[in-house]
Structure formats: C-alpha cells, structure tokens
Image (cartoon, rainbow, N blue to C red; front, side, top):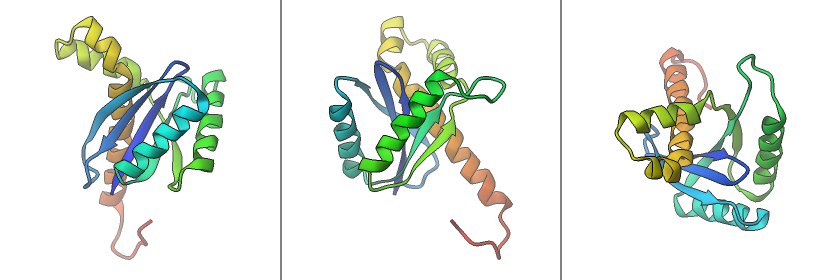
Length: 149
C-alpha cells in the first residue's frame, strides 16, 4: 500500500505518492483550492483511487522548531482530514521542502513556468521522501524482537 503526502498552502495543495514498496516518492498533482468541501472530497477520492494507507501532511515549523500561524492552519486542516479519511493522518516537519523543491527544479533545468505549476507537488514529494527515509532508518535500527508498528 502507498503513502500520500500533502503540502497544504492557502491557494494550492501539492500531492505526492510513494511507490507500493514505500521507497520512492513522486509528485502526483497540484490541487488548486476551490472550496473547502471540494478539496476534502478530492483528497478522499485520491486516497481511495491510489489505495493509500496513510497521509503525511507537511507541518511548517520555524527554524527554531516553533509553530507559527501557518502551522496552526495546517494542524486544523489535518484534523479535518482525520474526520473524513478512513486512514491515519500524520503531521511531519516539512523542513523547507518548497525551497528544496525549487532548487532541485532549477538544477534540473525546469523553466520558470513549469516550476510554478509543479512546485507544490515536488515539495510534497520532498516531504514524503523525508518521511520514507526516516521510516527506513527506523527499520534499520530495529532489533528482531521489537514489535512492528
């Protein structure tokens, strides 16, 4: 089963998916926010369509680890997702994912227009890849007698 990540912004939501083995994340699409209800329905539909078992929501913390206004908005949005989705929803520090996504797209030679259209999906993929890498590191440290979660 796949994992999905969301990079939630005021105007757009970047969406990314993992492969079924949960090794690699890739940007799926950008949702241009229309109405709150329509956005939640679309995300719910994507979760079902792609057989997602967990949704990871990028949590925008300040560099000192504190939560600001945008983090509060994202936390509320994640809570609303928990109410409508039938899978777990977790917050994950997005760690400047948009900055990293922009730099990667520039390095790859993407034109400004393409960067603008895809940046949120690429940022969501960066968030999900960080999450997948953390899961992998945790698995490597696990001893044989530890329970799996």
